Amino acid sequence: MAFSVTFFSTIPYNDPKYRSIFIKIGGSLLVESDNPNYLVPGSEQTVKYVADMANYSVAKVLFDMKPTVMYRELSSNLGLFVNQIAGDLKSRQITLVGASFEPIAPDDASMARIKRQDETESLMNDPSAMAAKMAEAQAAAEKTMAAATPAATPAATPAPAAATPAPASNEPVLMKFCSRCGTPSTGSKFCTTCGASMIRRT
Image (cartoon, rainbow, N blue to C red; front, side, top):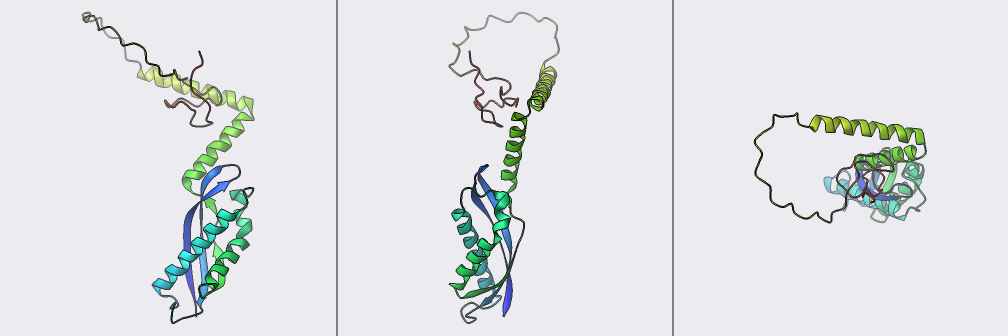
């Protein structure tokens, strides 16, 4: 007697272009128990067992995938996933009758990083777009600084002389904007967008 099992997992994947990302992959399986006395068809225990096995099989295929396969090409390799799942289930007395997969895609955090990387590469390949982005970032920074500047106040009674200032620290001076892609500084020593050094060269 065939029964349906859904599976889903988020698995790390070494994409040849975007490096370490996380892939969301899942779907539905139609299976039959070869030994109904041991693996009761449709029981909660059997369903969980099959789902766990499917997630294991999918992870094994991803880990064994050649480092030249981009995440966008994974959907064209569904046969590898189906064969691995069928083989692993058969060795555990479960027969795979049918399978369907949801679209394979990076998780939200990985997708956001991929988008930033693509935008940065696009800017690097288009000097006019890079100049426009830097001008936009400069204007936004000037607007923020203008809003943060306090209004002039009447002269007050001079304060007592301050103590001798402490010697300057050895901390490097950071640039306000990345010299490579124009991203405003966040206080980090490296650009959060393209990874370039934010330390001002003197």
